[in-house]
Length: 403
Image (cartoon, rainbow, N blue to C red):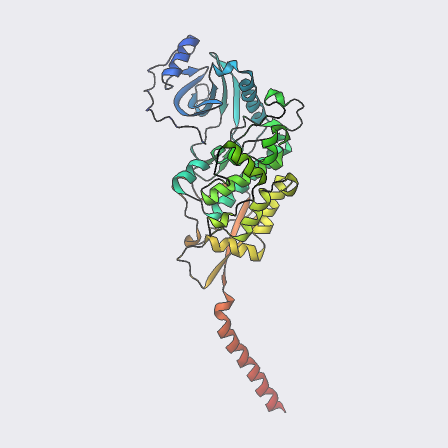
């Protein structure tokens, strides 16, 4: 579940504002009463964005640089918990080693006035969970675009030995221009770490149960990049259907279902999902890691080639994206190419996105799309037969005259 939003109106700036060198306890009291105007180090808090198990996130201003940032703060009472502190520091360390357009950037991590904090890139937009909760299942093309961006982020992380371990809709932020940002690396770990930095103990589980692969449920230390791809598959299922794959029962029932129950077919809940999408999703959600895509690059190839360039599957994908007002005598073919100019599809072919999500095509700087109108040969078959018959008759007459 995403962090709960704070519906209180922010206090006018300056109401609780201490000086930069003010008493730490006074600052802490101000944060507890109302975040607006309080300071943590050089960061002036503007409003609370949300809270969760790893502390609260505030919209803040970096007073040195004059820019807005997201400030993740671990409360003082939780700072006495060594496990939470280890996770908090691991998030900062993991994210600091990553630099990718689809990963929320970390600017700084430290402590001030008795608080541990991480200064993060502020993403002005929404998250996938909130988007689906408000507007229902997303258009197929839109989900493919999101999955491709997140997979690219996971590929970057995997190359640096980082496993996220908590891929879920609430951790996929979407800018107004359609760019997806992967966030919340609080459970991330280096796959080469020998002791896991004290984040988990052998036999213990971290993550979110609705999106957790079987091996991670048994022991978080077993999770690798293939586990992230399983969680991404469950997230994709949620985007396409508006439901988690195994929604029934308590925590233990769900863990058992992920490990033993047959994978649900998303087409039973959304008939617009083409066979190609269902096939890739099925492989992502395989019970055994060996049966899944072994790397994010392999998934990207599957997305690009198996689904979007194969004629049979591509036709199914595009059919699911067509609006009711599309001319039935025209079929639109989508082609992927690198670089160059990108031509937008006809207006009737654009996915209808919820307000504020932007055009998904604007978010992919490398992969462009070319749309070519092709005439449906079946609609021209009678005319073609008449023309062919005329040609045959003409040839026959000419041969008769020559003889």
